[in-house]
Length: 185
View 1: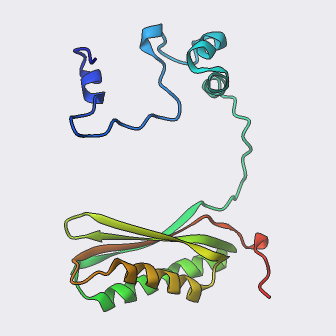
View 2: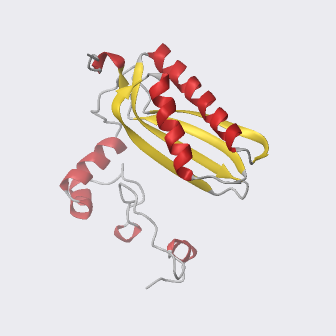
View 3: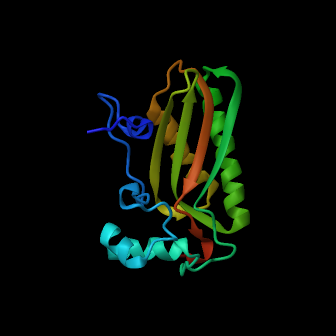
């Protein structure tokens, strides 16, 4: 049941649409008279949220965060993208562009000393719809030819025939330091 409140009406999903995803930590419930978490006692939060979530929310609200900070830590993902000047129909141009993106990513991986374990290709079409395909690599690598083979397979697997492509983007993810890689025999 939704009350005649504009915020509740806006939050209620329209017919035929799925309900919105919950946030990782619930907002302070107004029905308990809570407007800010920092002004709420820990036992009250524990009754509402449960012990673990209440402790975490309470500590963060008071500026306490025990998670370690790792300076210079590797980014989780790195992307390279290309937006065509006009909608591109030529599959050969798509392949050339993806190979150029692979070269950019491979150069970045080599200079940063990182290796990647996954590759994702995102294609944006003229009508602004997108198709995304990803693949986990059999072995973590920064080797450009291996990345190129995977990227080419992703693009070919889409089967683009006369597709009006506006943007191509390639993303590496699940990156780890090259020092952690096993030597190739």
